[in-house]
Image 1 (cartoon, rainbow, N blue to C red):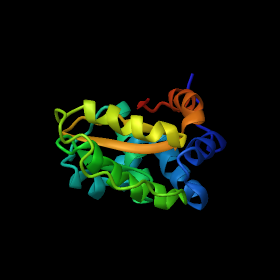
Image 2 (cartoon, one colour):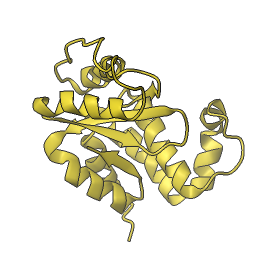
Image 3 (cartoon, helix red, strand yellow):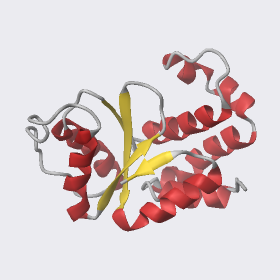
Image 4 (cartoon, rainbow, N blue to C red):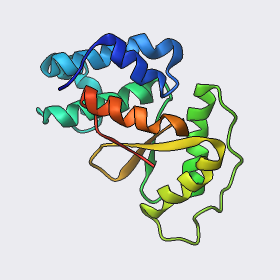
Length: 172
């Protein structure tokens, strides 16, 4: 059973550190959850920038709406699959800055000796975990890793709320 209340969306978005932007983002996500066709029309230009000009499955549209909403407030980043863990951590500093949290120390050589790919995400999480942070990967088909950050002790609640609201994401 999906719950689509504004209160649920606000609580969900606050886990990402949305703060004052949460009501605006919740309104946007409420639209995709209740009227995907209207959402696709309203955000057609944004979808076209991603190369989406025809109808897509509702699940994919919901997940994309979540990512784009968070990206619009610098609460998520998209990292190329060829980036090293150090590059990804550097990008995640934008999210931490927006969340008002301390920035990560630059580690440009982290992951340079390892194969490029999903293993880099494990290295990122290994760096975040001692700081009480958890990496979130949003569902998106493509050659990038859409990423966000939440408090480590919030991952179970985040996953539960995401399922209840109808979003797909992965936490470490």
